[in-house]
Length: 193
Image: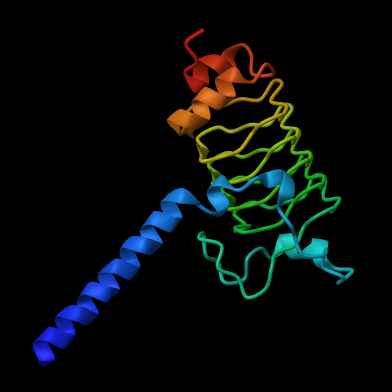
């Protein structure tokens, strides 16, 4: 009887796992979310919330585990020194980071829609699974950066440089379709035309 009960429980667990997998396949979740209808929490009321960029994610996890949300929305941080900061999971939309140093920074799972990253140095940075739609990267330097799983629809990459960057194949396709990616950047990305 015990063996039959264990087999039945194992069968139910497998069925539950199969149902969960089917549900995930039908609705893949945040990675395939409709960004236009995404509901974000209110902006952090702390008047110093923008200053948290200089500390970054205090747990230091690239997978965006945080002790509290890193809310950098609507922050004006031009020419900020954010070298080697872990900004994973940060909410960075409608912010100004123009001219900042983000060398070796980790921007995994960030939501940075409609922000200004013009002239930012992303040398050896990791930009992974990030929503960057509608943002400006005019003259940004992605030398030796990792650029994978990134949403870039409507972004401006005029004069951006991608020398020796590791770019995911789907990301390269989207970048090559972007009309602001021209000249040497197209060669560095691997665009065919």
